[in-house]
Image (cartoon, rainbow, N blue to C red; front, top):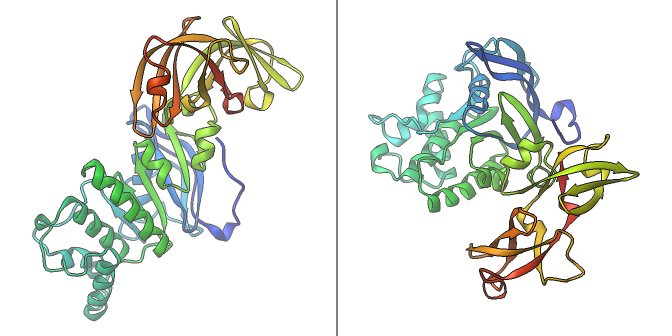
Amino acid sequence: MSESAAAPVNDIALSIEKVVRTFGTARAVDNVSLEVRRGEFVTLLGPSGCGKTTLLNLIAGFLTPESGEIFVDGAPISGLSAFERNIGVVFQNYALFPHMSVAENVAFGLKMRKVTRPEIARRVQEALEMVRLPQMGERRPRQLSGGQQQRIALARALVIRPQLILLDEPFSAIDKNLRAEMQVELKTIQRQVGITTIFITHDQSEALSMSDRIAVMAQGQVQQFSEPIDLYRRPANSFVASFIGEINRLACTRRIEGDRAVLECGPVQVRVPTAQAPAGAATESMLYLRPEALRAVPAGSAEANLGTGQVQAQVYQGTHVDLIVQADNGWLLRLREPGFAALDRWPVGARLAIHADLAEACVY
């Protein structure tokens, strides 16, 4: 697992130490440890069944760890019920009470905490203004759009002034355009309030665009915990490299020569710094290159360092064109060309050579 430099103890809002949770013989959360800084937006990202939702439920108090401990602001919370934890939760389906007004929904947690009526009224209005729905207090949830319901669920979680907030795939029920708008809204509110946030998603682009750091999970374990740019450019292992974004995988044989790893990828030989490839004797490895690290150049160009091939298909994406290239040695590669000039320059059937930015390569 890869992590950034350790933060001071008093800057840690959430600490998870060697937590284990099983269901039958399966370890849903397997000896997980991580620390979240105060005010940080951290995403738990991974495929279905990776353990991210179980970990969120352990933090919230809906499940209890079989071993390990969870600390909020330095205090252990595993022995506390969900109600006793000062944690706000926004569920995937929002879980608004249909028989209550918007204001009553937002006020629910305050009433359970025996807050006085004048204070409840003041804080509910403050929360509704925070999510830019100050005039919606008398409406019922069914009278709101999906995006408005999401905001009310967020206001209900924030109004209790929690130590941290947990968000369980809150955008999964709204359409793509509204989802993008709500991502901006949520991140803006989170920064304004300065609240520590744990966000659950399986959407990679959502995680990369919103997070301060991302914990990628698989089989109940954290595979890498890093800032988005490090996660994308320097994945810790082959799972992370394959899971995050699109990537080309090229089988090769690796050997180390001084400070360089020499990779024999079929008839093509490439050299990368040993920092980008594990050290050791010659062994079978996989070279990973993002589509944007590959560029089409004319056949015979001195820039070519990854062989030649023929364009099999073009995939126009507005801001870029992906070229699907059948390399002469059998690889099927995806090259990403910015803009749209590649549509005319490299039509289907065109011959080309391939330049790889080897500074962006990873080997596992």
